[in-house]
Length: 288
Image 1 (spheres, rainbow, N blue to C red):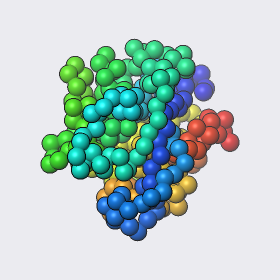
Image 2 (cartoon, helix red, strand yellow; image 1 turned 135 degrees about the vertical axis):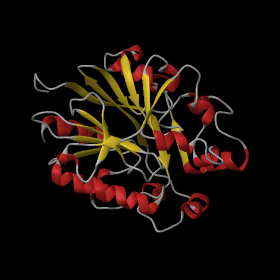
Image 3 (tube, rainbow, N blue to C red; image 1 turned 90 degrees about the horizontal axis):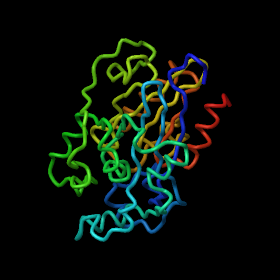
Image 4 (tube, rainbow, N blue to C red; image 1 turned 30 degrees about the vertical axis):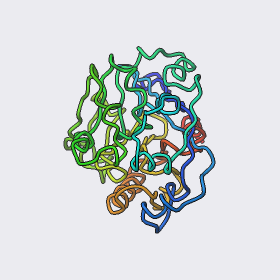
């Protein structure tokens, strides 16, 4: 990082691993309920990534990973038919040394150092660190928060009892017009510190209120952290969609991200479950 760059460090850690159905990664023509109930294959293990950005004004997380209690605590997930869906869609492994506090410690940080946590969306493998972050500002899009009030939240992957925890300082982001033409075709967002270094962008499709974070600095490649917009940066670059989400909105958002590349040369897409994300981040930071 250059001396006048407000971003001092960008790193990625993984709170365990997950295997999912190949159709989840995509592309697939099958309806999600069809492959969810009939698929017999699993992918190789994929990471559950948390991105760590040290800005001069504070430490920022993009997503908070998966809670180890989800693999150790009976009753973490719903029972009955809804619970069956959770067992069919993914299987996770999280070691005692793979919790969010442990992973941050490996980078030389304490959980108390976190000033802001940006949550791409509210599925359980992105909100697992919330109970450790009562001291921090938690940012989620207004549209994503509103989805909690919809019918059958648990059937839609939203474990309200693990999200709406007492004592958390939620900041529900309402995107405002952006004045930066270099962010086209995105016209709304949130400049997190007012210096253009970290910008939140609406990227709906996987969920109604999914958002991404663009990290920029002088003399280095821009980074776009996209949550579950894709599971594979190469598939996204090719315009291929994952198997989970609203296909129309996914297609629109994927097209917008690929159009953003024209304005942001060298844009590196970093997803939550891309096995190549660590290497992609290292290459971007090294200028490869």
